[in-house]
Image (tube, rainbow, N blue to C red):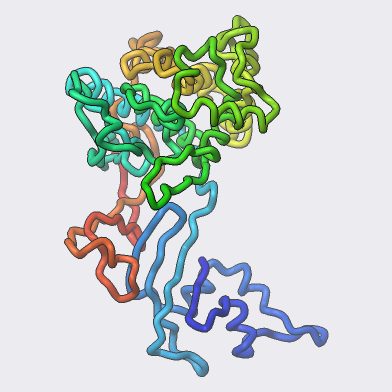
Length: 399
């Protein structure tokens, strides 16, 4: 936990300044417990309110505890940063259930309601106390059944940058549910690794509202999947930003030329499926996947294994026409039950992602206040409606 007090000094600097630091062998230093204690900040400050939260952390309003050198009237903003990787790896039964339920919801949206979500990301996927997955935030969702004009004409930019598909990044004006399926792949990867797989930096529009080529984000994708090939992506050369892709490939020493081989291979260290070298420019998706499984220490019988890799690679297909649909993904071998019992060999996944788990997960309180969200980050202001406040809440037991 870190603070940004009005004096501009860190906690350690303030302790030194106030004479808290001890002396040993003539050398001034902080007591060892200042660094070891997890409550060093809360022992110096009283948390009096929640201000706001974001992707990288949460901000709280605090007042300094009474002391000889404290200012009881001074208010401080204390930020708690979220680590890049926070917590242990999620159990496979939980990941499988969340993913299956998400795909089931998308299957309904895409085939029954003719709706594109256009902003799928972990922040918009909710889980009830009963372990049921809900798809939220349909603000960018649109009907795509026989549109009178392209969806691009209404919204030039859709999908949060880290979850945006290559076809959108390359300027596609006509797109399909495949853009949602790419985001599902990103969510699957994030459930496995607990961090975004394609964490690029977004280039903002200029004063003329011109949509820029997201070179950094496309570069993050190319780093792992390699450069797309024309023979494996029909229509690639017709993409509006194709020339930008060529310059990106050239800077990496790769070309978007028609090389030999396809995306599929009869041999793979993961037992078939996508290759890692035939994507052009050298794909490292398989290396990324194997490294995640290794660092997560999944038990052999509970690892997503080769089937998980094949599902991920088929969701990360460059060509939107070849990318898995929600229906195809629901019938993927990854979801086939391998446990002994009446459902062995069948597609059988629990609709409760907490089923059989002993762990307790914290409930999240949702504010019902209707205060303008634009002022929620100001010290002393009320929180905006809908922001989740999960501070100081007891864990909710799961059934």
